[in-house]
Every structure is written in structure tokens, then in C-alpha cells.
Length: 154
Length: 127
Image 1 (cartoon, rainbow over the protein chains, first blue to last red):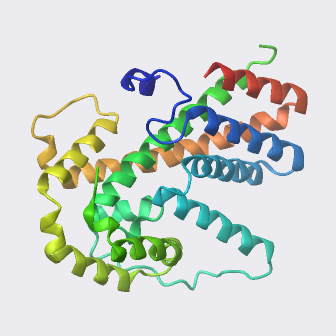
Image 2: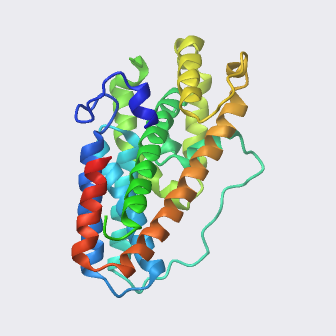
């Protein structure tokens, strides 16, 4: 893997840069089995949304509360879950959008990285680096699950 | 790496209280007020205290994370381009997560529970 060649520490258990891969994998596995068990007959779209949420949740939980992006991500997940639980309140499209005339690349980055709007430039760069690292590892993890889950009887 | 401004009481208070308020703005609302606040903070003397070296170091670290085959000599100078490429990379990763979760849900539909868990465990132990 790319990260293992760049990281001089080959042991995946020691969290040198961010969360350990084993912890993320464990959480993701648990979430996947939960998704599979609870709603085996739901539609593909709903299940894929749940899987995506599970991926982000496992990423954020493993990163812990010491990172601003994981805090913001966890808050956003809880907020959306609370909003879904007290359903019936349909949040229509009457939400005011930001004016897109003054758009700088830093603002774009702030919108993409969770919790990025409340940071100064240096913290934003640092959080972006950590976020990209964790996100790419999550993608690699999901890719490996899909790859080995495809052909049956392995 | 130490950012002195982040560990002052004011910095800590800001960091503690800001993400809760501004995550909603990340979702929908216009963050007009925090941006003015932030712009004022940037233009104050705190920005000069954070030296350009730290920023360029962070920028180079970010650049090393991006999957770029070509390594431009003066690539660090164009910070705007680097930020744009970072945004594109994050968007691409989000798209990949979406696509992979679609594939995973399709896989889960065809599998029964026992072999699904065994396959997942096997793949995770292998990675």
C-alpha cells in the first residue's frame, strides 16, 4: 500500500499518524454487519447511504475527538440522526445559500472539509491533510472489502 | 507543531465553541458572521506571527499527499492551484466512497449473512 511504503513504521497498530488502520477496519466491519443484519430487504439506495454513513462514522470515531474535522463530522451525523428520528419535519429548500460571487479556493476547501468554516488558515491546512489521509485509507479499506467480497468461495 | 494562537484561552474557547455552531453553517446556513470575524482575525497581527515558513511547510506536506506524479519545482508558489487540486481530490474521494458503498450494498444483497461476514473478515485481516 502507498501509505505503508511512505510510513517508516510498518506496524499498523501504532497510531503514528492518526487512527490505526485496524481500529478503523474493526469499526467499519461492525457497522457493516449491523447494516446487513438490520435491514436486509431495504432498497439499494437506502442501504448504500447507510453504508456511506457507516464509513464516515467509523472514520470519525477512530480519529477521535482531538481532531476538529472528526468532531464536526460526528456532530453532523448525530444531528442528522436526531432529525431523522423526529421525522415528519421536512426541511424544504428554503435554506439561504451563500453568495457564490466571492469564492476563493480556501472557501471551497472550507466547505469540503467538515468543520472547516471555523478555522484559520494553518489549522485548515493541517486538518485537510489529516482528513485526506484518513479518507484515502477509508477508500482503500472499502476497495479491499469489495475486491475480496466479489468472487464467491474464496 | 505548535500554534501558539490556538492554545491561548481565547483560542481554546474559540475552538471549543465554534465547531458546534458552525457545523450547521457547514450544512446549510450562510456563515457570514464568522467569516467577518475570521477575516478580522486573519488581518490582525496574528497572521504575521504565523510565519510563512510554517504555511509553506504545511502546503508542501499537503502537496505530498496528493496523488501527483509530476513534482514541479516551483509548485509550492501556486498555493491557489494546490488548494484547487486538493478540493478536486477530496471531491474525487467522496465520489469513490459513494461508488464503493453502492457496490457494497449490491454485494450485500446477493450474499447471505454467514458468507458475507466471513468474506469481510477475511478481507480485513488481509489488508
